[in-house]
Length: 206
Image (cartoon, rainbow, N blue to C red):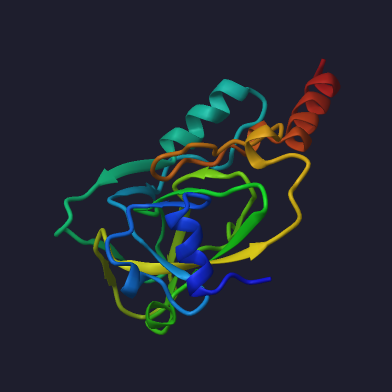
């Protein structure tokens, strides 16, 4: 069941759902969602002198991923200019903490989607028990550069009630983004299936 505006506000007031800061509940909360704002930290993917990710050396792979992005921190009145076809990682200004009986979907706001802003490619699901800021995968599909100011409402969260999970996000092995602040680089190399691939390739080369 989708939470209504009244239910969202009740859970926030009772501290069953943590979304902070909420500076204007009347404007941020819609009939069945709450708007989330853009934070001030960005991870811009650079053009680098690399042909591929090298999985033969795990430490080298981690460094490659770190070198692949540049962190940019903006002032509140300073925009990040997202050019057409550009891709950048951002994050919500809000810090979120979900109980074990709620899950959420991160969606874009229509007013920004109509000028070409896509706020996520794959990372739309928020697991029960998640805690931290959410990452935006920002992509400009339009024809003109988009000025993105910290504090702007570019996304919204829709909440769904579920039966209490047997294992929340923080208890799950491989929960890589718990308590994150700001956007984080990919760590696909920590996934168990990718670890299996790396180990198999090592054994084949020995």
